[in-house]
Image (cartoon, rainbow, N blue to C red; front, top):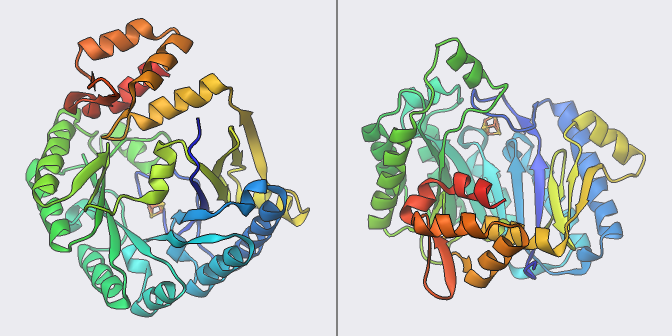
Length: 378
Ligand code: SF4
């Protein structure tokens, strides 16, 4: 049930400061911690190459995420990449993405990443309105995003993503539309549009509880989602997943791995892997992570071997996020395996899922309720 594609993910667990809405595992960047982390990560990559047979498979995508990968020095990122190249076989068109905070990257950094073979830059813009960035405790400014995109292009990058969010405190439909227009003016090849969700134990959650900030308005988020479809569609971006839009040919290969049940190895604290029908995850604690690697042990905390039914379930649930949908026979086999036949019939009757004989996919209404549909089919 897994596809044959294979990728690598690196979780760089540092940021300069924590944004109010963020619940990811991360540490505030310090030079000495970063140096120790890079040593541990390099050791993890070596051990992983020795212990996983997958190391012999061609790698089609590498993704540096986090955290903020560009919180590391560029020389640290490029040395990690060259270590990977010595131990793994990269396909000639391997997609290599680095996520960057626009205010943490210079022209020279971008030139060095490009020369090292990075093929895609992904900038966390979040909003193109300065006031909205302030309200979510997001350091940096819109002008830094504009500058970062121009510098990336000058360095040679032609494949550029911008991440933006909707449903931010104080954001109106008009300001969201202005953010989309400002992004389009920068001509990225890819846009990820995420609905803000309030995660427990974040500053945003506590500000909302103390009535210092507003909870996202779900009705407005639906309108914003519809506006994104219309505005980005008119600008030539194809929606290929619930939250992702791309110019033709620029869908993110690495993210497609997750939605098509492809296999990947993840490194760094809290990184997840999926290989040979087994999901496993690293410990989400930098100190424990480093201690394990000092003892030459992989820092894996959880390991779950999936049955064939569970692999099919995941393929259905992730695959339904794709606009192209999934083979209908997979949906119905999963429904029989899990006793979800009545629920599936109901989702079809409610027109949240549609079928064309061969494929099943979420309808426009279903895409707006993708998480609810997934929960019902789990
Ligand atoms: S930059 Fe990204 S990873 Fe870091 S705190 Fe902000 S949202 Fe979280």
